[in-house]
Image 1 (cartoon, rainbow, N blue to C red):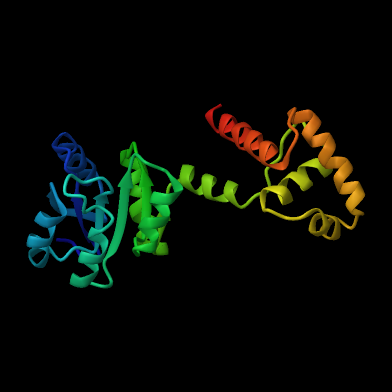
Image 2: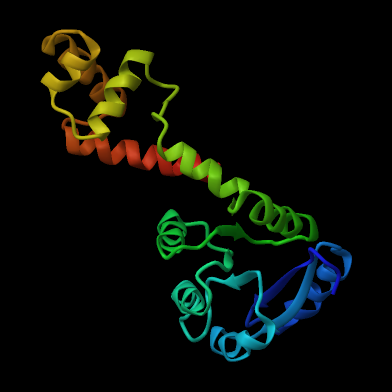
Length: 213
């Protein structure tokens, strides 16, 4: 093996992808595929023989040991870099992977270029995450904006979704509670609802529909 070439193992229970991964790594000069396994258990048994620098593992495994496998590999080598690969981009699963000390999360489909970029990110930056997942995470921390409402109404909606009281909203926006109430009544009117709970439920439906577009 050439100097400075990192050793990679892949864990994927879908045998049809094994040849694809082998082809990918035949084109990479900086990375060498030293093992490809059907399960975490199989990879652990062969671990000391290959001593990988980076592990690329499927999240969903038949033995239920995808994300849980991170801790098992960390016991073998606390410094090994681990990339989770999944067709699921649900934030809860992504969060669980990083909470278990994954170094990266790549969503499917994994192409020859996307895998190469992920490996480079791990090599040079120590972490990687797919663009689609990064966008979802950023969106979670940005105020929602609904085109059918004014800028002030959108500000109040954002506070309502955080559970803020009329007084808190008024203080933060430097207006009176009666002004907040006026805007909230307009929001209810546009949503065709009569209460805060109904408004929040309708807003969640609007947000979900927007993600489907």
